[in-house]
Length: 392
Ligand SMILES: [Zn+2]
Ligand SMILES: [Zn+2]
Image (spheres, rainbow, N blue to C red):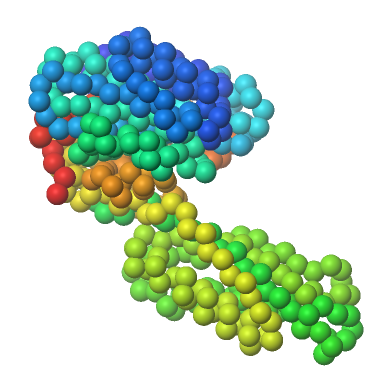
């Protein structure tokens, strides 16, 4: 694998990854990171502009006619205290690159270096998207609003995400849905407060809330095709004043995860019927709000199949068909507009301690995966721009 990418390019990407890892920045605060990206692009002679506050978009124009491919990397870190033991650990208390976005940014810069170096034989254009705030509140939508898919018009795009489910040196591509939609549920159940010794003089919101939590499980257990997928998780429940007071109000919050747009559309009516019905059965009322978040990410099936065959043959990379995850990813907004494929990059390596899932304070990233990631991005760009791989 490593032979596909010059050692100097991989070493530069690893140095950049460590530099970003030491200085993690949260969403829309990626000032240091985007300045680093701009410096690198300047050094490579790649035109670029600022979008979406801290986002950077670069364009490599090939010498030959062809299509336009976009490659996206996210740049933001998480509000976590690092406990990985890595030599390049975070120097900022309470912030950590625990999702691998430092490596995503470094690999995209590595791919930019390789593609710029081969510009004489490059068809079409390659758009480099360095995106802020993937972990929230979301940088993809403001980048799209800034026109990053329009000029040059993007024909197909990809992103890498590191994934400890796969060993280093391999990648995962799933045709169809890969990441779930993540929507928020907020419920307030209202009764009438009173004395704990005189329940008949009050309307207790607590048993109504308890029954609501259980009844909501019916959406997954009894109302959805068992071969489809939905999660309704109640994450918080809060109410009451003290042991001898009947609670007049309980608030619940939760997350709703799904892949299928039809199931996602239908879930709000189910929640309103169940929560409203249970509250009424307990003589309570309920306020229900659903806040729609990131949509599901759906890989273009033709593009996923074509790229799987292409990267296996061109790079010799083992490609696994990973099952989708219930994690969310705001790349969904790009994939709604342009045929797209998410590539999971294997980083599992016990010898390096690269075994923890993302968002863990112990998360470590096996840097031996970086050449594979760069080679995968380069292959996608070459395949799309030359017309060797095509979406439906
Ligand atoms: Zn994450
Ligand atoms: Zn991530």
